[in-house]
Length: 228
Image (tube, rainbow, N blue to C red; front, side, top):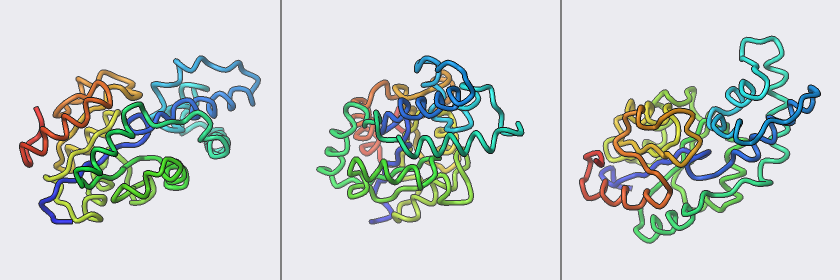
């Protein structure tokens, strides 16, 4: 890949894939194990992008410094790993977006805080591994978002300069990481946003996956300038 060529990078959970139903089910299993009634899906969905930490806080008011946290977190991850493709789907319009990127021969990749052991099986399940140029998990580098290193690592792997990259995600940490990496940023407001995406100061907000292709096209046309 030419260093001047554009690279489109996506967060995964809440941006490309709707993984919240299976994540919420794993969180509710922890409540069931403690004799508690399951919470409504709607109460857990906004926390899906924050992984085990966010979901266990929402489900059990459990914090990482609590004595029980390591044990419950591991049980949550084990439960999730055993049933992470029950209800998970790509968001409507994402498959079409991937086709459009392929038709235009545009390189794209995934940068997620989900550890590789949990991310890669889902990526493969939907056949994305054969199409994306790079997949970076939460344990691929020593850092996780909002640190910029996972995004910079992805760019280096593909041979793209950060100023020729755009990062799309549904969490404030995604936008923080993208900005710190010197990339254009898009807030995926259709995802699991726990707060108002307008407060993240992304270059632009996508209200649905259908918005992404026009945004990418405008970004390309403006070369390295962020879309407005």
